[in-house]
Image (cartoon, rainbow, N blue to C red; front, top):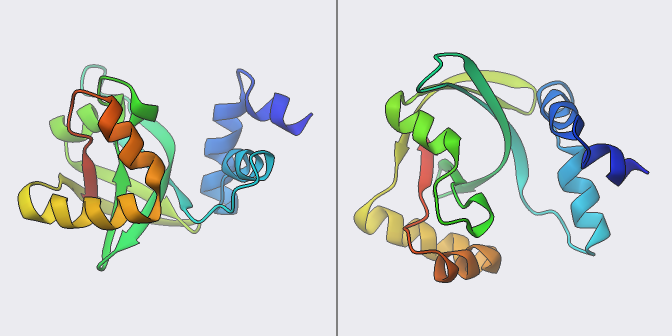
Length: 147
C-alpha cells in the first residue's frame, strides 16, 4: 500500500516534502526494503531555478560524501540525456539544499578531468549500479559537487 502511494502521481511531491521536513526519503527506504538492499546513500532536497521558466524546481536526490565533497550523480537512471536539474544548474549554479532538515545555500559545479575520474572510481566501487549506467549511456554522467 505504501509503495502504491509513494510511486503514484503525488508520491514524488510527498517524497520531496518528507526529505525537507523529516530529513529522509520514504521512497528510497521503501525501494531499498522491497529489493533487499541496504540504503547506504542519504537523501537531500535540491532546489534550483528553472532555466526557461525561472520558477523554483525541487527534486529529492541521493547524495554521497567523498573526500570531503558533497556530490550527487546526474544519471537519470541510465537515460541518454541529463536530468533537467543538471541543465538548470549549468544555467545557474546557485541552489538551495535541504540536508538533514537544514537549509544551505550552495554553488554547484560539474566535476571534470582527473577530479571526476577519482570521484567516479570511488563512487562506482561503492555503488556498482552507476558503473552499469555509465556503460549503457552514450554520455558522460555528470557528478555535481556542491560548495
